Length: 574
Image (tube, rainbow, N blue to C red; front, top):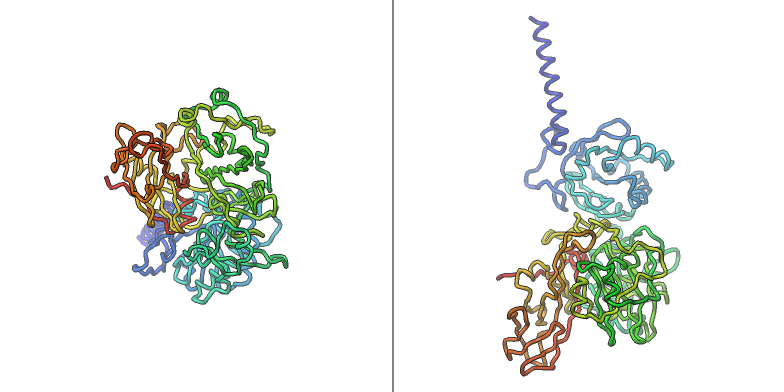
């Protein structure tokens, strides 16, 4: 009888153990399977700052186990890494140095993204460094999924109660670790002046950012950035460096400078010749400038990103960043001199960082402003450009010139190497916290008026019938859809839902006009004049008058919201 009782008890214990093991696998973050985790229900569990990080219990590379809920009482650094991620590898020394510095004051855990134990051990052995922090195993990527990790690496810093105080997307520096642990410990960071959030003031530039002399005379701390950044000076290697953004936010994209070669001597062909290899649903950048009309196919631009062009003696810089879907054209004149640009191999918020071949200063492709170097703060004038389907562009401009595949480089121009990225789950590189108001890869058109930003999702404009009369920050403008082709089921960027939109100022010599579509044609309500898509009145009392075209172009939502965090969003109310 006693023997039977013992066997029954043993069986019950075994069943409980097996049951808990299964539960831990199926629900690795449920606190019910971890003893002693007393959670304050007033703090929600989540992955945003101010929320309590999801619990986990994982095996470690040294055959132990780590459970987050058992680490209460000290700050915890939770880092996600993989052997294939160069930025993860680059930050390992800083993680190790901080782990040693804060021994007994903070716990460091790095969680691998579903790679085999053998692969991790071999990689770390080949690396040859000794590490004192915990390497945890996440064989099915469950923890990374629960933490919403999309950008690699990603680091969370938790306070002693497991509440997230820092969420860093991308490579984290030792100083950022030090500051984050200080915040988690309830003390003031030692280098708060270096954090991105305090560099953005929301103010308009205090100088003329298009005038070189004014920019060179700007003082440290002056607001000179188009986003409200202050001019900063840092000593790097003993040499003062001017910059608008934290230097640590500029990341390597992989290639070296000019590793993605710009096209500096572009050749052009006719629309008929281009149509032999360029499908109607492929995107081109369409430009009308100084009496010349040209198209630059995405299929070529993805391999070069920059074209240094000339329009009847006037230089023009045509750029495309496939990571952001941003096609932009600038007048590359610095102090009256035309200057060539190249790719730096760097990225800022997943966006192309260009450099000028006069001073080697770094420039943001999205804003057209120098962000690091001698010319920091100087801005290039932007001209309107269309990101439009080839079929629509050649219908509008049958005599257009088209960038030739004869670039001087051996490239496969018939295929977009970014493939499904355009309709994927998010950016490859760090951009900061993702604004949840729209889909991360949704296409919007952004507009900037006196430092204020507004986004127009193409889906909302299409839902409004393809024409919108709007007012933003004191400026009244017209937004309408150009062309018919909206989306195709092909590969690469051709699969993006991005009808071409144009923006025009609705004020005409003091008269505010309202517009409407009648059988697909544009009329103003006030005078009943008919207008072309180029903003020219072609019939009626205003015939010959022209609206001013405003600069705006398509971009992924993460671009607009990360560069301009306070962006307003247009919503169709019809």
